[in-house]
Image (cartoon, rainbow, N blue to C red):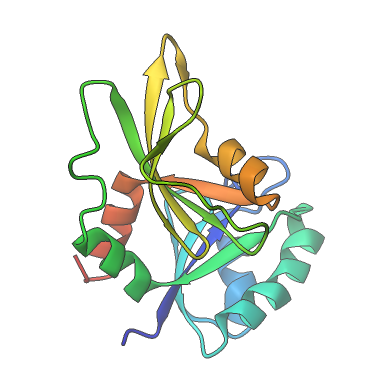
Amino acid sequence: MDSRHVVFYRSMNLGHPGSPDRATLESALAAAGARAVRSFQTNGTVLLEADDPVCVVAEAAKALEAAAGYTQPAMVRGLDLLVDVLAGQPFDGHEDSRTYRETFTFFDGGRPIALELPWTNAKGDITLVELREGLALSIIRKQGSNAGGPTAEIERMAGVPATTRTLGTIERLVRAAGRG
């Protein structure tokens, strides 16, 4: 079992107002006890090692608020989970010519989401293909210039904050961690 974890920050855009820069993010996590901290891309996705990653992220949150005014939640998942999900090829058989992106939406707690899968919203721009505890896998479609918004859909259903990453981001992250 891999001891590495991934932190998915909600609404973080490194270096922009209300978000820390990369150095501040990484140093806050390291000061809170994380090891091998690596910010991945600019969207608030961080690979790290920690004995208690949830506590590390909670402690780092204080420094991120003080340094950049960042107060959004973060979802922590084990790298093994992402490897397992990718190995199952969950999007196979659900994609079609209308597919815009495949996505991973992370959330913690909230109301149970009980749907018969695959489930497509009324607009037809989001299809949930798999639900796991704290993770929804979706295919989004673009209609005109608007693409489906799985973050808002999951937040509405579960009643808690969520954050979304594309399949490409997750695949690159897993490869960068030497697991893909």
